[in-house]
Image (cartoon, rainbow, N blue to C red):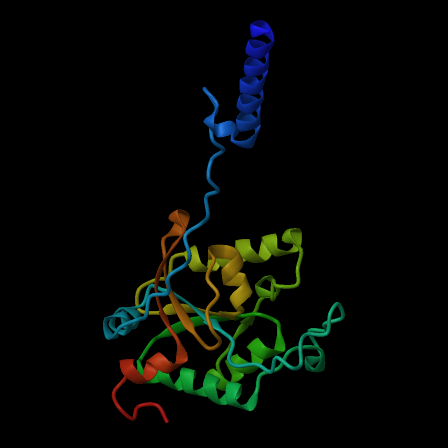
Amino acid sequence: MLCNTLRTVFFHALLVFLVGLFANPAGAAGAVAPPLAVTAPQFVEKPATRETLTQLRRGGFTLYLRHANTDNSKPDRLPSVDLNDCSTQRPLTEEGRAMAARVGQAMQMARIPIQSIHISPMCRVKDTAAAAFPGKRVQLDLRLMYTANLTDAQKAPIVANTRHLLSDPVGSGSNRLVIAHAPNLMDLMGYFPKEATLVVFRPKGQAGFEYVASIPPELWAELLPAGAIK
């Protein structure tokens, strides 16, 4: 009788141990808890200051301008976007055209010298460039194409080209301007700027580039003298 009782107690204890082991394997002797997932830090946008404009006047930077405000009710006609037919692409709004003109005026009022303008082939970018910098020569670059609807393999040369434009040194006295899309920067560095935002980078050659600051469209009024932008 005693043996049967001891046997029952033993098997009961063993059952409790096994249930606890499988329910919480990390608590077992020698067990190692799985590593916690590591997430990339969220990008933090840094507003430009008047000192930023002073630096830009001296040159040596790459500026990345996201196209101006667009009409989201008219999305790109996928998969048949025609680069020569703006009706197949998401267009600028009238406010977007006016916003692009104001940004161009603000850059002129800030006396920011531009040596070259590189633009995406999408109509909303070409229209932004035309409104912001009328009469200025631009370099249309297929490797600045909108990346949001592309595969990873299709994105690769665009991301590489964007990295090159942000990293390639610019001589003092002027700046390089790139006008393109937010998803392209998101793919490159995890940053999705709002429409008509100017992003400032310091090229560092083989070492890449350094993010300096951003100028959302509404910030120009704070950076320039009152009444400078009409």
